[in-house]
Amino acid sequence: MSVATASIRTARRVDRFTYAIRNIVGEAKKVEAGGTPVRYLNIGDPNQFGFTTPPHLIAAVERAMRGGHNGYTSSAGILEAREAVAADFNDRGVAVHPDRVLITSGTSEGLELALTALVDDGDAVLVPSPTYPLYTAVLAKIGAVPQYYRTDHTNHWLPDVAHLTSQITSKTRVLVIIDPNNPTGAIYPDDVRRQLIDVAEQHGLVILADEVYGDLAYDGPVAPMATLNSDAAIISYSSLSKAYLAPGWRAGWMAIGSTARLDGALAAIKKLADGRLCSPGPMQYAVPAALRGDRSHQVSFRNELRTRAHLTAERLNAIDGMSCVAPRGAFYAMPKVELPSGTTDADYVLALLRTTGILCVYGSGFGTAPQDGFFRVVFLASPAELSVIYDDLAAFTNDYLA
Ligand SMILES: Cc1ncc(COP(=O)(O)O)c(C=O)c1O
Image (cartoon, rainbow, N blue to C red; front, side):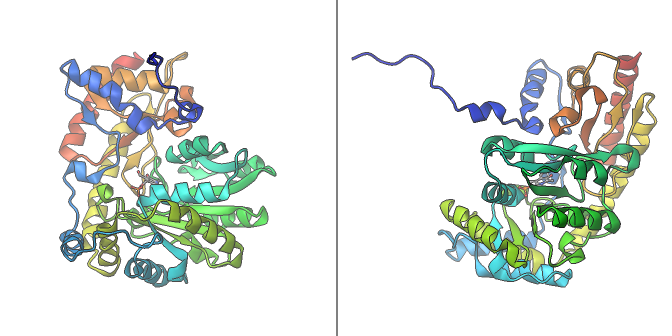
C-alpha cells in the first residue's frame, strides 16, 4: 500500500485571514530567543498588566461550577444572564427584551454571528479605517468585502460621514461602529452618532455597534447607540473582557434592536447560535453578577487609564517626527511617525522591536496605509514602566529618523 507524502492542502480562505495583533508575536518570539526581553504592547489584556477580575465575579463562576452548572446551556444563554443584560440596557435608556439577547463567547463571537447571519458572499460592510482587525478577518472568512470609511486623526479620529456615505453601494449591508474606539481611543459625540444612524437608516443598513469599551470612557460610561434612536436597526454587543477584567472567560452578549425589521436577523442569529451549542456555561453566571453587582472597580480602572492616556499622548507628542491624538477612552493610542520615504509602518515597528524589544502593532494591520506611519500602542503597563518604554521609544525614533 502506498502512503501519501504530500502535505495536506489548506483552504484558500485562510490565506485571506490576517490578524496582525497576534501574527506579530512570532517576530517577538525570535527577538526573545536572541536574548532581548520583549515588552508586549500589542494585546489589550488588562489582566496581563496586574489588573484583576472583581472577586464577586469569580465567586459567581465558582458557585456555578460547584453547584453543578457544568452542562450545556440553551444556545441563547441562561435566562438570568439575558435578563440582566436586558435590565442593564433598560437602566441605560434602551428598551431590550431578554428574548432579543444572546450570551456569546465574547464580543468576538457576537460580531462573527451577526456578520455571518447578515452578509452574503460578495456583499460589502462598512468598517472604520483604522479598524479592529477581527472585522476584516471575519469578512475575509465569509467572502465579504470591507468598505473602509475614513476616521480622521486631524479631527480627533472622528468618522468622516461624507466619505462613509460615498462608499455605500447596492452591495452594502452593514455599518460597523466601534465607539469608544480601538485602536484610536476616540469617542464619538452624539451629533456624529446621530448622523451615522441617519445614514444607515436612509440606506437600509444594519448598524453593528461594538460597545465593548462603553464603560471605559474616562469621563464615565458612554450611552449605548440605541439610546439615540430606538427604532433604528442596531445590534449592540459587549462583554466581560474589558470593563469587567475577565477576557479569558469568553463571556459576552449581544442585543438585537427591537424594530420588527430585525426579526429575521434575530431568527438567523439564533439559528447559527444553535450550531455552536452555547457559550461557556459557568461563566454565564458572572454576567448577572457583573451587571447587577458592584462596579466600583470601573471608577478606579478609568482613572488609571486616564493617567496612562495622558502620559502616552504627552510623551509621544514630545518626540520629533511623531504625533498622537490623546485617547479619551479604552487603553489604546494610535500615534503617527513621519516615515522616511520608501519605508512602511511595518519597517518601523519591526525595527523598534528588534532594537528595543518594544512590541507595538503597525497601523496597516488595522487598515491604514503602510506609508502613513501609524502604529498602535497598548498603554496598560504601569506609568513608571511606560515612562521607561517611552524613553527607549524616543531614543530609537530619533535614531531611526536621523
Ligand atoms: C473593538 C473590539 N471589539 C471586540 C473585541 C473582542 O473582545 P472579546 O474579548 O469580548 O471577544 C476587542 C478586543 O480587543 C475589541 O477591541
